[in-house]
Amino acid sequence: MDLIRKKRDGKELSPPEIEYLVKAYTSGETPDYQVSAWLMAVVLRGMTRAETSALTDAMLRSGVVLDLSDLPGKKVDKHSTGGVGDKTSLILAPLVAAAGLFVPMISGRGLGHTGGTLDKLESIPGFNVNLSVPQFRSVLNKCGCAMIGQTSEIAPADRKLYALRDVTGTVESPYLICASIMSKKLAEGIDALVLDVKTGSGAFMKQEKDAVFLAELMVETGERMGKTVVALITNMDQPLGIKVGNSLEVEEALDVLHGSGPGDLRSLCIELAGWMLDRGGAAKTVEQGRSIAEKLLDSGKALERFRQMVTLQGGDVRAIDDPTLLPQSKYKLDVLSAKSGYVTTIDCEAIGIACVALGGGREKKEDNVDPAVGIVLHRKLGDPVVAGEPLCMIHHNSEARAARASQLLMDSYQISEAPAAAKKPLIHRVIRGMQNK
Image (cartoon, rainbow, N blue to C red; front, side, top):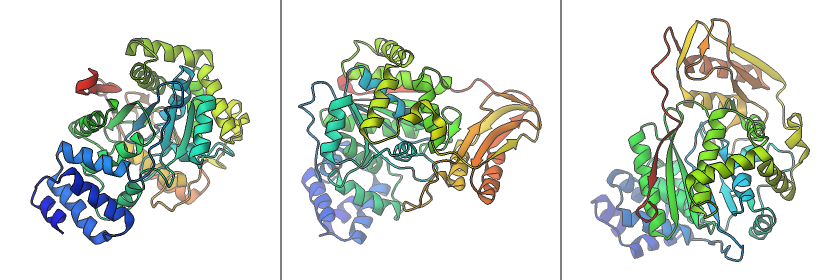
């Protein structure tokens, strides 16, 4: 009760006080209703940088922190704050591993309008994301990258606190978001982390100032804990690439790994890889890192590393060269434009919600996901369209679900007579800490 009152009154908690609270809740000593009150006090009063670091550290040390020091190279990861059509992890893990770094990626599932890396990977027949820590280390050692879900040993305090935040209206606090993300990522035993913080209509942080605040908080927290961290603020006013939905996004990631794919997706992957290679010491500069990444994509070396990871994690590698072996929807439906003009706005969040409506995402954590359904965009921001032409195509397994998604998609597009002003750049800005200017 003293700690609840202290935070309620806007006072700073000491690291030992925060550590006690996290330990007591994780062990079951402190009940949900008291921690709920403390979380709401944090939402209303905020936290200092020192408190945020202390909370991150306590959550991190509530479980196992992987020691990967025996692997002969730098360990680097990337984290995205979530968007629509964001399949960069599937490309970046093998791409960066092909450059000689280790990428121990512990990912999440989709919730709400954003897709999850684990759901995408599981659309590859047989792919196992539930590796034990020894199996995870083995795959990492053999091919330089491994992609799994959060295990019971890693940051158990985060799992418990997140479930409570999810039902008490306390998800949105940037301080709690920072501690949740960073405790999981730092438990991977990494040396460096590149953050992709989304902003725009399809992001959790709609306003750029909020995305920048969260990015600065995570960069500073990582540095306080001895890690090299950099954050890129990137645009999510429209989906990344043209495909939204688990199996469809694997197809598009494979296009990029085969040396083609949509320009925006390829560009963002090269930019993020450039920073990962630079921070991990595999490139002398970010520019050199970008150049290395382009060559690894075009040469097929990144694709070969992906093939190796899929094999080691039990997936059917035939799907890499023949995407028809991935789950396919039974039906397709075009969503037609009601008028002629130019696409000036896309409600990106509505595109994500439409995919959930099709069965491609979760409205509740226990929901099952249909890997085959999704949306393929035929028109994006700035594109001209004639009345009666398709704006996008729905891949579906249910007419009722498709009807609901179709209306959401129709409403998400704004068509105007004149093209909009210049589009926002894909990368808005880079946030670097004091230690890694």
